[in-house]
Length: 208
Image 1 (tube, rainbow, N blue to C red):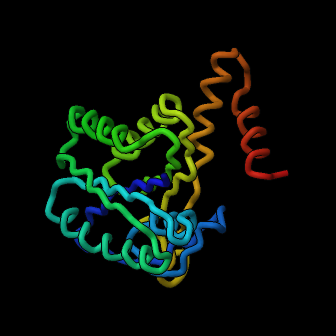
Image 2: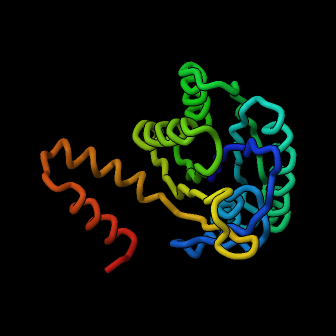
């Protein structure tokens, strides 16, 4: 099953933008949204397909309020593509305790099964949430059978506007595989791993 993971924005004033992909045209989605994961849902969920979307939500006033809004935005894509969409909320404490992130790690792993195709957004959340997301992806990629990491995306969120109402969206999936290559090259004792990794990623992405 295709599964999409994102973190619910915690901002008091939740704005909407068109997230414009910089390096993957498949992620084009010309509707205004508060949540870049919708670009991935629009891009990778097939017409009429059954998918699951998981919202990591910090248990505070604004995250809980924003969850209602972003679910409504998700419903726009679901209806447009006639999707069968299961929505789940992964609620975690609004603190920075290690125990909280360990619990999140465990909850994320329980959501990933054999043969899943995973798409995740690391735009929102405290700085540690995306780290835990990537840790869980890495474990699932190795420990589960036939798990495919389809995309990891990052939107500029509330950064400098690219143009009127438009923000940049980056496909950073290659960073996941860069970590994989880095560890393999380390075990093999290969020097200048940055050059080797750049060469491999360039070939994967179809560069010259």
